[in-house]
Length: 222
Image 1 (cartoon, rainbow, N blue to C red):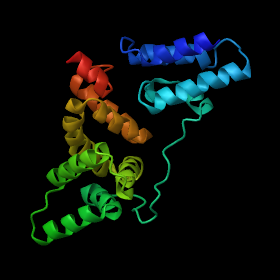
Image 2 (tube, rainbow, N blue to C red; image 1 turned 90 degrees about the horizontal axis):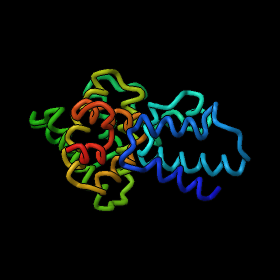
Image 3 (cartoon, rainbow, N blue to C red; image 1 turned 180 degrees about the vertical axis):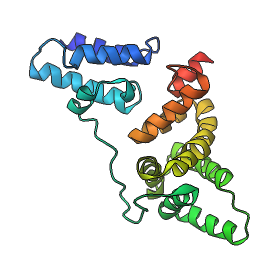
Image 4 (spheres, rainbow, N blue to C red; image 1 turned 90 degrees about the vertical axis):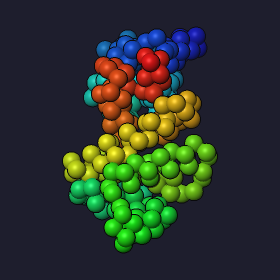
């Protein structure tokens, strides 16, 4: 049984398997129609799956809803910072969420607005790149994790304009840094919260082609 678990783990991370095939493997192994096994064996399979999903090897959006519930893929969590606008409206509302959690960004934003030099999309793109380099350099300041939470918050609770700023303004800019960064870029991708991870994958697929939903798959295609 240990060999079977090893084989399951290896299959989920195998670069030659398409995301749809990995999802089908998960369904066949631990889905509703999967053959019955002992609880210890199933618990180990679930643990392997959770690990693979967390690190982006399994696309959550391709799984059946019952399986997602059974493996406890939780809905997007509420932000840690209660000061965030519960329903960010427009680009200004989205930007305000990042200003709340990132003091230096807030200072820059206030200064540039005072001098009428702030532009929403170029400003948020630069913020995204700075966040990427802080994260990949190992910065442990609280705002680094809080920015991930703010991204998730806007994508879950914001209106369409607020969400568009995060995806088109921030994520596109970060992907231009993450793509050539190799494993550092993959670590950033794995740190994204659930809704942000899906938006990130959708963005990659939109640019590169069907079923190309991770940086690693994008590099292999190129």
